[in-house]
Length: 203
Image (tube, rainbow, N blue to C red; front, side, top):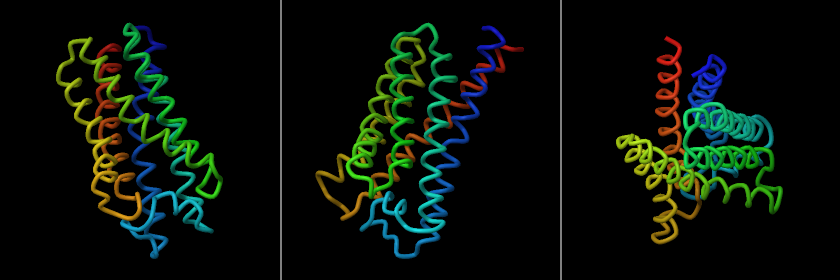
């Protein structure tokens, strides 16, 4: 692996670690700054149209973290799967997921119908991307990562399946948070793996 490829891997890995930390920090601070928010009655995106620091911080967090997810997919994951066409498809799909997240932040809830389309795209593309990447790991004979990624894909989709069949809350904040959290756990752990790969290649 060339020094340039190593550099890209490191950029992608750092982006993948920072993305969920930034996203959840902004979301949780936005929730804290807006006491009327209800986990069972609201959507997380309701925070994006609250005037002042709440909406600004929430939308910035989504836009910036989405950009970092794109960076992770393009510089980290695409380079990691450089010899796997399935992995490259998964990387492109994850990059599209990051673009959708950027769109949610760039087009708040009151921008209709753009916000709705980007929100649906994000929560649909996330488990689909993970399923494709699980297949890529399977082709690379990385069985543990394939199984782990498959489990995360299920964990990202399950809150929505339960929401539509059981309807356990009036709002969608809980399935949104749970699905995004599952994806975040995966991206942090995989970013650490990509960073180790870059370190081993340069040593």
